[in-house]
Image (tube, rainbow, N blue to C red; front, side):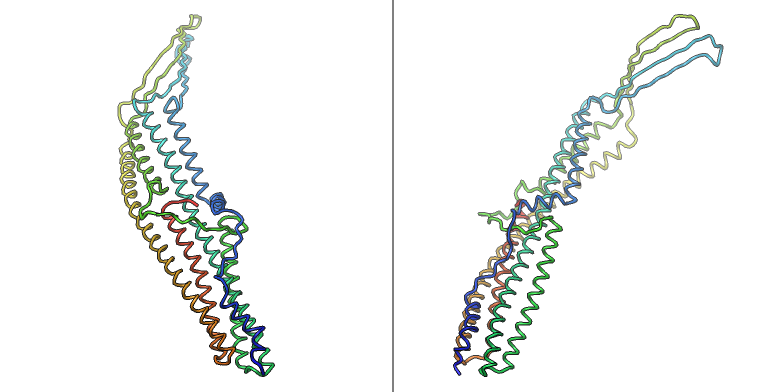
Length: 410
């Protein structure tokens, strides 16, 4: 019986697939950009609501500091008569309006503190948005990796399906033992299980993606490589800007408290009407009074001490943040270099295993190699292709993590 007649429609095709297949690429159809996905996730994030709340608080503080008085005016009404004494008809009525007045430097200090609060709110929002971008980057590349694994599993299943079909035909022709055909069938069943497991992993990653962004489809997470990224975070890093803004906010808040140790003075304008007795003409007069508190508020020292502590803590946190960000960038840079080296090694390994599978296929056609050896060679080649696909996704994720560490938005 001519063995090559049976191999031509089956194993030769399987060998060609194994030897000539390209690196499995993720089956992701981008429908929008990564920045669009980040914006969609930001709209769904609780941090966005918190940022809006902080912005409203800062706006309210700025409006209060810009008002013409440090507090609300007060209206007073006072009336006296002699009805319970001699009842001669004497009465006295006074109507006054009291307005608090800014102390010297107090309004400017509060305005500066309110402006610093607005700056901190914006910087905090930018930091929160960067955090959401990191979550989106991780979720997007996780989906890419799972799609790559599914694509590789499907390729291996197709190759083993053709090999199993060829084995069945050869068993029917008496050119191959039934044990070898059963081995090929067992490998095919294992590949089918791997495809089902990969589908489940893709579905789970897609569920996490939808929950994070609300988008039904994936996006292309690839980002352009930096020309020469530094090993230290840039000065415009959102987290650094937020920390510096917080230091300035606590400093100005302390200054505002220092200018508000005492209650604000009050100016009172009053109108008074006096009647000495029944039938006597009324006398009217205007009055102007100044109320100037002399002592400090009871809780002013405690508030100033708390504000000073916040300022010192913010300064320490700023320095610690610089160190953490530098370490984070260094770690991300190392991770990117390692991912590039591993990808190059996996590509070389996949090329070697493809060539080995091709040679063993040729040897098997000549009757010099057993089917189990060919099955192992095909499995190793497919696994190497899958490793290349996974490492490509790992390289993309490593680059995204470097961008994240540098504070760059997609």
